[in-house]
Amino acid sequence: MIWHQPGNNQFSGTKNGLAEFGAMMGGMMKVAGDSFAITHAHRFLANGNLVAIEIEFAAQREGARLDQPGIDLLRVQDGKIVEVWLFSSNPAQEDAFWGK
Image 1 (tube, rainbow, N blue to C red):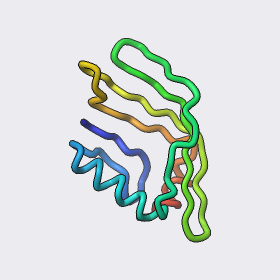
Image 2 (cartoon, rainbow, N blue to C red):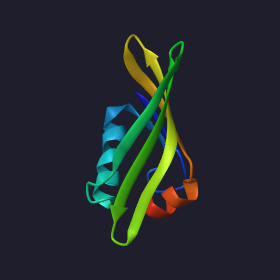
Image 3 (cartoon, rainbow, N blue to C red):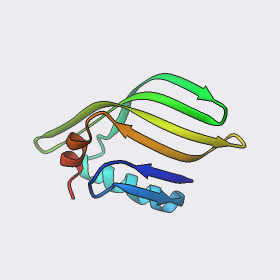
């Protein structure tokens, strides 16, 4: 799996494989005190092997809150997710929340 994490923060960049993805998610959960979550998934739109999902995500930590909509774009192959691109509606808010 290839994961493209947007922004300019400590978790941004391309993650290759489940180990790198897992390390990133573990770090995000630590920063957010296990509060990071997709709170809503509104629409699933497919076009061939691509699926776009309109989501909302949120997290909170000492004095800061992250709450915004986004789009997740997944590439599916043989019934498995093999590549993911994330799009945040407010990258500056997300960068400030996750930090460098």
